[in-house]
Every structure is written in C-alpha cells, then in structure tokens.
Image (cartoon, rainbow over all chains, first blue to last red; front, top):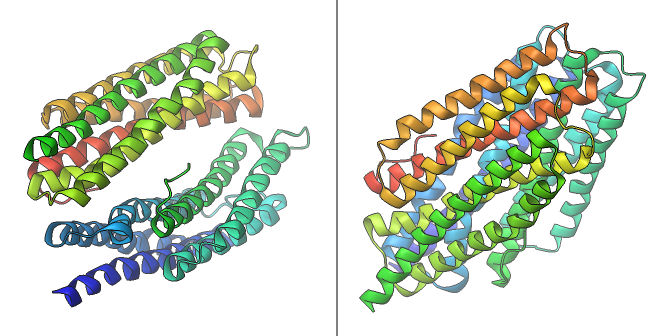
Length: 215
Length: 215
C-alpha cells in the first residue's frame, strides 16, 4: 500500500517534468517556425499540444486518486494540491506556444515578423527556452535556488517586450497597423510564458517550505 | 466533526461566490472607467484586486485544511480539488479587469479608446458582466444548464473581438499604431475573461457529474 502510494506521488513529478520538457520543445519549435516562416514546424507545435493537455488531465486524475485513497499530509499534501495548479500553468504555457505557431500558420507564406525584429524574437525564444528548462529542473530537483535565475530570464522577457513597444511606436515603423498588432501579441505570448514559469517555481517553493504562495 | 466539515465545505462555495461577485463589480467598474476615462474608478478597480487575491488564498487554505483533516470522497473531493482551479480562474479574471483599469490610468487624461469604438467596448463590458454573473450563479446553484447561456455570451465576446480587428485594420482607421495596439489588447482582455468564465462552468459540471473536464 505504502509502496503504491509512493509510486503514485512519483508519477505526479514524472508527469510534471514530462510536461515541462514538451513545453520546452514546443516553445523552441514555435520560435524556429516564427523565425523561418516554417509551416511544417508550426503544425508540429499545434499537433503536439494534445499530449501536453493529456498529461494535464493525468496529473489531475492521479492527484484525485491519491487524495481519495490515501490521506497525504504536510509536504505530500501540498504537492498533490499544488500539482493541480502547476500542471494548469504548464498547460497554459503550451497554449502560448500554440498561439505563436498559429500566428505563423495564419500569415504563411508571408513572414510573421519584419526582419528587423528577428533578433528580438530570437532572444525571446532563447529566454523562454531557458526559463522552461529551469522550470523542469526545479520540479525534478526541488532546487529552489534556481528561482532567482528564473526571475532573471523573466526580467529579460519583460524588457524585450517593452523594447518591442518602442520599436513599433517609433516614427520609423514602416510595417503598418496589422504587423504592429501581430508582433505585440506575439511578444505578449512570450512575456506571459515567463510569468507562468515563475509562478510554477513559486509553487514549488511553497511545496518545499510550506510558506504561503506569494503572488 | 461532521458539522465542522460541512461548514468548511460551505466556506469554499461562499468564498467562490464572493470572488465571482467581486470580479463582476471589477469588470463593470473597469468598463465604466474605460468608457468615461474615469481615473478614480480605475483606481478603485486596481485597489479592489487585493480582496480577490486574498479570497483566492483563502480557498486554497480551506481546501488544504479539508483534504488534511478529513477524507472527502466523490463529489466533495472533486469540489475541494476543483475549487483550487476555479479560484485560480476567478483570480485571473480579476487581473484582466485590473489590466483594463491600468490601461485607463496609463492614457489618462486622454481617452483610452476612440469614440467610434465606445459601442463595441460597451457591448463587451455588458457581455463580460453577464457571463461572470452566471459564473457566480452556476457556483451557487450548481445549475449546470446555465452553461449553454454562458457559451452564448462567450461567443458574443469572440465575435466582438473579431469585429474590432476588422475596424482597426480597415483603411478608415485614423488613430495610428498605438491606439490600434491599445484597443486590440483591451479587446483581448475581455475575450480571455469570457474564456475563463466558461472554464469555471465546465469545472462545476465536472464537480456535479464526475465526468472528466473537457477543455
């Protein structure tokens, strides 16, 4: 009985780490699709979201099962309850990667972003890839010290988002209203991606320390 | 013991309904602030978010308490676990109202939206107010039949969001790139607000019926 319980608890962690891995692949591929106007890659990201959604449902089911069959206490209980919110955040991060891929599909065969912004989105994609890799590591290792580094990448995403506004609103912007809206929404997807990653890290800190979740 | 347990379960419902009420006030006030360029009203919405966040934390604490002290089964268990995701959605809806209010504050004393879009945002505010009122009612009454009507209001929000794109991207748009981005983001906040309301209704259906949550 105890063994089955430990196995189920471990299953939650395995599913959450798998979700973080898949979300990492999704955001990297979505960025590649965006930078190369690659429709095949975009379709791959869109199709891949079903697996992330399935894992989200799995985490919920396992959590319900543990809560129903066992009486988890302290850290285990916080893990079971926290896992539901963590998998919700990871699922949403997958959705944001899909939003980026769908934008590529919508504009294809035209480019989704003007060439002068390639570098900005390359940096965003890199920071987003790093932050979700650390999300997976924090879940797997409970090394909450990584949270500070994650905040750093989140700040990078926020700064790039602000910088992009400056470009779009400058008198030099020559790409019109539609492109301005496109790149603003795309940039917002990366910025929100970072916010969700940070909220997962905060949840893990809560699970480990028992301190209330500070938003 | 049993009595205390029932009291705690009821507390979750009371907190969730209170959250829906506060979120309803927030989105109505945010829309009023937007339509009237009313800074005082915008500040009210921004300040009011703390209470919604506190209730979110309360729901989580009560849920943890019930799961730790009792062994809830079936519907009760689904309520305890589902409440965590429902309060997360309501908290996010409050954030979206705050995003609208902050946009009013950012542009004040200038108007946040061109006069020709007042009617669109008035309709969005009305649909958002209706949908969150129904969210509260579904939580309070478990009348899952309301879900269909909620989908109707969500469709209205989606349609208005699409309509707005048409306006912003038409050759007649005379307000420039910044205003185009502003109204697109504002419109997206209302559209996301509707999505979260619908996801709460689906959760309630899951709690009542035990059927898996369909996204």
